[in-house]
Image 1 (spheres, rainbow, N blue to C red):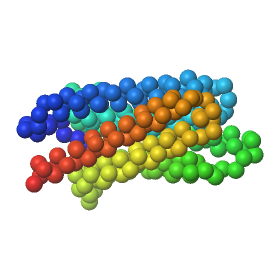
Image 2 (tube, one colour; image 1 turned 60 degrees about the vertical axis):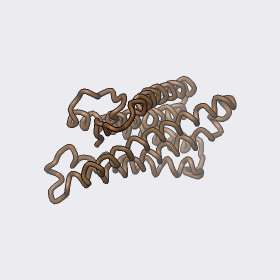
Image 3 (cartoon, rainbow, N blue to C red; image 1 turned 180 degrees about the horizontal axis):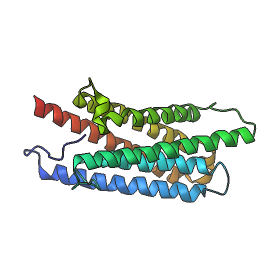
Image 4 (cartoon, helix red, strand yellow; image 1 turned 180 degrees about the vertical axis):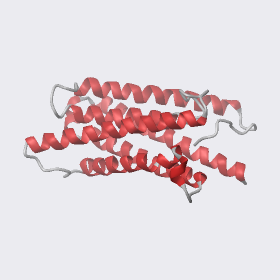
Length: 224
């Protein structure tokens, strides 16, 4: 999905900066997930499972799944591409599982309290995101089991998967940002904590966008 070599003419400082940025992204996605887990205290109520599972899905598992292919700071840097692909798909399956559990928790919680479903932008975008991330994981099967890709170019499938995956990640990030504006979160944190949480989510999205766009820009340069 990504190339591990940067153009030789590029100054080393750029590579060092991207490595530092990737390491910071690892730290931010883990820290934000732990923070939400502490804040929501999963198990204390049915609702508490919703922010916990959704953050675990889109802030941790999905971010780490994409960062596996980063040429700067990947936790699987020395593993072959095939191994990275399998690990990526496993993390994505964990993401889907957590997203479905988070969706089920909030739907059932609203049902018990007699509240209407999907009446906010957060709810609607969240539902769309869960559906899309599930389809994205299923659509990735031909990239792992090539026999399912008969009649298709694997190179094109990888490009489509990367592009749709980036859209899916941005949908997840948008859902998280809208969740930060919910009554529960705004009542639980102070102003500075809110801005810091939003900044973590936004910066993670920017890093992922840069990684995916650079990978396929480099690929086009090599093919031209």
